[in-house]
Length: 627
Image (cartoon, rainbow, N blue to C red):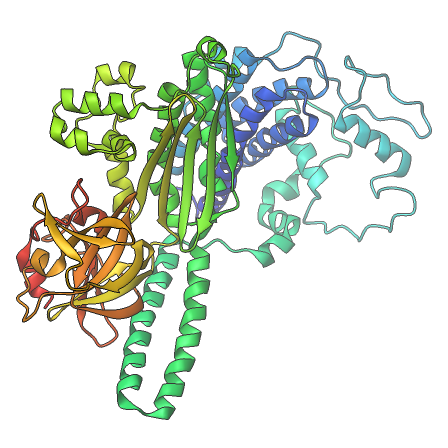
């Protein structure tokens, strides 16, 4: 039975190794494009070497064996014995995939799969082995150069040690007395290399390793290696972090209630206290939300490998350009967006970009380009997937939609080009024939859009025939706390996501009319579809609503008729219970500053495909309970 210390060491190793492997996937794709890049070669070599060292310390032989062979290949490449080719890169990427499988097995407490002999053979290079460091006497001539005309790191370090000793360069301060219970980094690496080899050749350590202290007292050595990092960072269980976010959300609700009470009481002292709490709660809210944020680069770094493999499979030459990797995103959104983005990238590579010969005939470069960018706009994160391929033909989309029964001819005739592009998100639009005739845009795109909407986001498409397509998704900055606009409909309260609100105005007499069964208002020189939230929610009111809240859902604009616009609030949205889960048009519920229940509307689920509110609420009992 494993001891708690063994479990802790294993968990620490898994966390650190997985971070290395995530970055390694992107580095290997970059290395394939620049195989002579010494910095990249060293970085990739160090990653495999570090994982091998940790696995060796934990006696994980299957992982050590695999990393050892990859390290061997990379060490020869570092020493200019050869230049890595595509076959060797395939082997290294396959080794990375197997390492990830082994990591999952280790985390689940399962038996690790041994590396296949065929993979180990492909990781071997039939060439002169990398030179091994040899001790050099004081003031001796430089060692003979290796096959590539250079000496490796170990030889260079051995030379420095022989000239100046292990204390460093001339004039360097004398090192502090060594703790007999710990060993240095160099000694630890030398021990690992003597056990498992460095670059495939067991190396004689520069100094006799003190193995017993390592085996008997590994914990002090670990603490001695990185004391500064231990003081600066700490790993926190995500469950505790989520609990802290929930507590901060509850505090926001209490803050709202206290501010409301202070305003109604007229008590100046209470008002000052409420203002102080408001300031502190805002600061705490910002700090807690910041703890949940992660750079979007963590999400992006998995995509170069996907694009590379798909391009190889399709026989295309494709460059993936990423931008805005430092943009921060809520931790909960990082994994939630992974599958939708994979689908968008696959569509761009498979159906958006032409074959190299077709691009050349069209006057384009043979290499296609896919761009993946992220940026922050207000309180939303915008991620764009674009390509410089063939683009989409709106007329072809309309024709195919009619043929497949997605819309009728009368509806197709009313669609603008921009609205026609939205047809790719209709369920049932994509078929096998559509893949070849209209670039396959729409295969599963309705599922992608549904997922984005579930996250409180929007998905838009833009395209120019012959120049390429662009899909833009926007999601809230955080899922923890939302900023909403509170509105009154009769005696009920509704919350509209503020990121979707464009403006508010009062409907003047004669400004609206009915057209083809739809209520339309003339606003800013355009026809604005109106939706009556009182009718939708079946609220009986003494007078019809005249306040209009203009919201945008993708490229559509809709005016929501309400009786009163109350104001802006920061709220914590609570999910609905299983009885009401999935109710169209309702995202959740929250408690207002005066203690009342308000339903948070899902605007994308509230509007139909023609840009008008659904006729009535699907669950009137839910709306009745909220009154």
